Length: 313
Image (tube, rainbow, N blue to C red; front, side, top):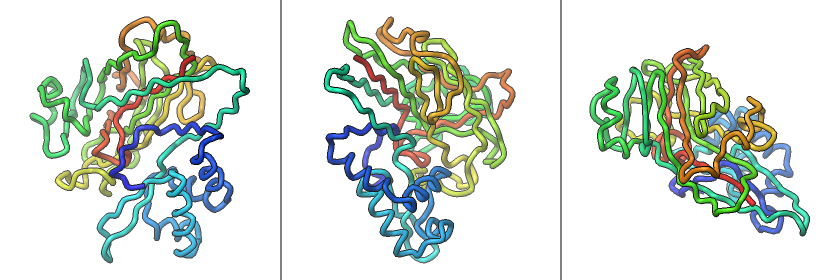
């Protein structure tokens, strides 16, 4: 799977009657391939690094990676290396779910919206701050006024020290339906001057004004070019983030499957309005005020924008 292929579903929900599910089950039925997926949880790596770290012959690593790629569990890219080009691999999904539903169970439907990171409806940001499009800096760096330039809609990376950006997702759920779960995914990291691998930042998410919880980003990742980061960007600046999946259901709020709060779906009133408000930011009174970078589908390591998915009946 090439990184050029659009990718906007970081949570893979398998249909047990689907052919892809059979390929995924086969791919996961190997301790070695599970080790590879676990290792790639730290970020993209080239094939040689994967083979070396997992103590595998290069030919064996390539064989297992081909199975994972055929199952759609990896995306790959060819990047310049010290000896020609090298194949770089990254996980395509952070979570895989397999719902087993009886024949008389509810039929679940899905609302799925991908929002460009520059399409925010409101913002309040403090320096350091700025926006990059795919080709250039938008307006001036470290000026909050840049976030109000018309060109902000073209942003592929945006960053600020504290504050927020707020998006309004269209509510596409039909009338008289009931939401069962909400998933929100985006690529983000801390914001330091240039980059810093020990730079924690408490990143919060609010849905319809309700704070779901906090994810503490460990670092501002740079020094190594992101798989999708444009070549004109200085490699010492922020290059990529981590793809995080927030899920809210009737049991509470989870990040990558780990519960972070008791905020449940019923508290968000997602059926009440024509839009669903999603705010992402860093509180000025957070324990770790380390800024935030948010990456779009043409920047960083994951070719997706901010994706909101709601399963409903």
